[in-house]
Image (cartoon, rainbow, N blue to C red; front, side):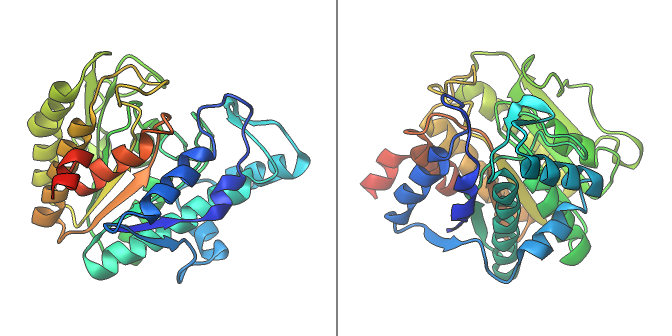
Length: 317
């Protein structure tokens, strides 16, 4: 599987003890670089920062993007909330993450393949004109919009397995008929959205699918959410591209989440999503790193979700 990264995403410096820190990606990339199942590529490709910025502005207000840029240039410490610290490298890191996402998407669409974008800061909480929850640009939304507007896709499904609900992604697409957004998440929990009754509106009525899960749930609960609700909804929608907001903070050892999903659980989710992409999307599956704050465990969990195999099974051949 292709893994796209950009060293510039490490330039988003954060305060001591902040969960979303550069080591999440630097250690992940180091681990995947020695795994023969993954091919690493820096997120430059045919894209450019200018093209990435234009893509970002298809889902975010240009005024918000400029406000973000100016806040960094002024040396502000925060953008919109205490969860969104700023450093001199934050804007460039967020833009590099969007660019790497687009490079990964190009590969997925051109080759009918799967790719993983190892990016930070994450994206699924970012609203059209507001930063939230460690997120500045909504990479899943950028990818979906690019696939629809510039790559000829007619339907895109976004499946979000982060422990937190992706409020930004839902709100960007909830009134549209060309994107299905489906999420399993801890509830009630940050950001407070994601109730089962939130099902879209207007042309998108029924195309928002939320499965709220009580704190403490593990593999059984998450797989039941996929098997019973999310996967059947995606099957009916018949997308041409599957985007996975790949959060790993439902992991039982995560310091931020309150769930108990195991490595085997992530592998089982990965198998189901991979099989769905093969059946419905011609193999086109784009995975984007969202949350997951156990830095030591993250490479193992990414391997499990990406390949559908946990480490012991892989070692056994």
